[in-house]
Image (cartoon, rainbow, N blue to C red; front, side, top):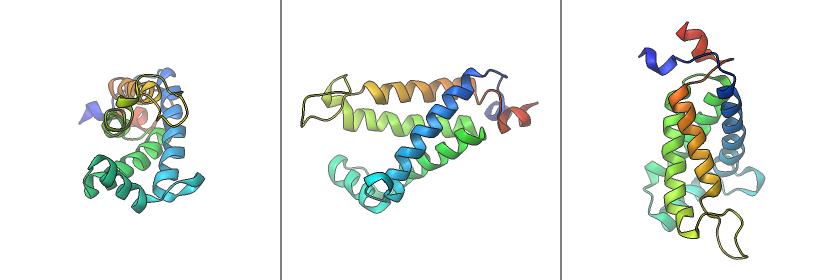
Length: 144
């Protein structure tokens, strides 16, 4: 159980955590709460069901993972489990929603975005999964 909280005092992970927290807070508030022109949780999960054949319960779990991940990254608490679930969520988005559109984020009008941005988020979550929360974290306090 110690491995969940174990981390070093590196500030590199703080920047990764806060970048992930900001990104996933904005994204999850749009999807789960309908803020910033989003659909709200029920319409979002229904959209995933219809478009990508994601089971309802798995869609709800994905939204929960995003919200939990944003809070976890902000506080630096349970960062490795949060990073694991965020990595799974973003890997699913990369494969199901972006892979068929190629690499680049900016595409011609009417075409979805490629994997460029989701790949960066996936690699950031994997870095935090391996390295832990870093400095300024509750995990760091617990692991001492």
